[in-house]
Length: 322
Figure: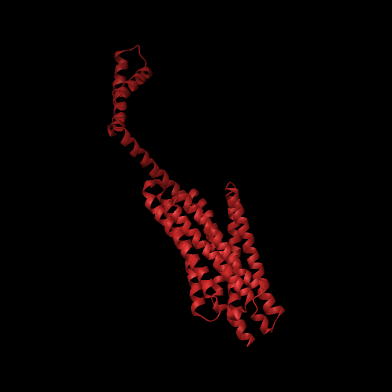
């Protein structure tokens, strides 16, 4: 009986913990890259990164403590397998808090780009529902046995549906705004396309995992959903860090710079043509050549005048005619 309980609850938890630790290593690398490359970002953003990383580290630590305490310290204790101690329940709260913090960051980014208060309010409301649902699930698990874990449909559904809706609104609003205004910045179309792809990829990743978590919870009696729930917070943090660290690739990519430079030169030519007649550029080039020939002939007719003086006078005369 104890082995069966461990397979249903602690088994999926252990698999999720292994994936969680792996993703924490990815998070560590992302944090290192961020602090070595971007030293001039705003202080509140750097502080947020530190807080998120500490929260992720604490999440890993208490998860390791829970699985060791349950399977090693209390080996063979069937009652302990069903007890939701503080380490197990705190994982849900940390996941909701971390995902909510990341969603609020993206809400700020959406506001900076779109200045649309309604979209930002929708994101914040869904994110708050996410946090409230995780808090409610945490309180319920702390006061009941893990055998009653499938009875928390309302709290878990509010938690994960709020997270999914917030992710979808964030991705849709950024794609809509950047796609709508991309034609205004032709020289930056390549960078904008990269931002669009990364926005969709990161938003889809967390959305899919949250949907799988909710679907497994509602349809499977065992705790298979813990595999996805354990990795959710790390995915949110890594998505945020990847978007911040990707700025270096957009800025220093050689191919992009060539494309931007080429398109920028075209943009300048277009502006010159729109403000001055096109004949100005072409006639200036030809007349300078013709004037040089005529002035060279004029030197022989006026032997006392230098060629340099005639070139200066001819250039000024030509500019005046144009």
